[in-house]
Length: 210
Image (cartoon, rainbow, N blue to C red; front, side, top):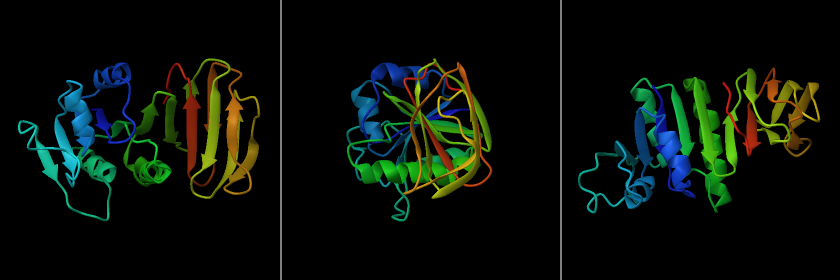
């Protein structure tokens, strides 16, 4: 099964949401993401969060799960709900935004949960991102902008194929060396790494791999 989680950040375009919703078995709104869904005519299966943003009185027919834990944000609550239902594949929309701290927090949440999923990715109108498994390949159009960031601070033993600036058993480290603004030179890109958590960001991609 596959879940779609919609957050309360910058909302996705309707076309992107509809495309992702059509592939999902379960649509979960993380608190205020439920407001966007309802205003655009989409009824989520459930709204999960501390409900400081979603107006449940305005939408009384929508199931809600109140979670007042202040040590977790609404995305964490939504992901835990999905995990409890034995779902191991999820796409996140509306989880980036104008506040950089919220975006960084949600990337950190994705790094926290990625091992609990077979597939977990964020998408927006610019492309998609995910924390990579040790070996990963995907299809893109030649010339696609691709960035790699060492979320764990240091990532060692990185090998890539299909990128303009290839890495051969090399390291990326925050504050020292990152892999931003690379570019694909093939319709297939492969990335492997030995240690650490590596964030992949793909812009204007045509197909996500697995």
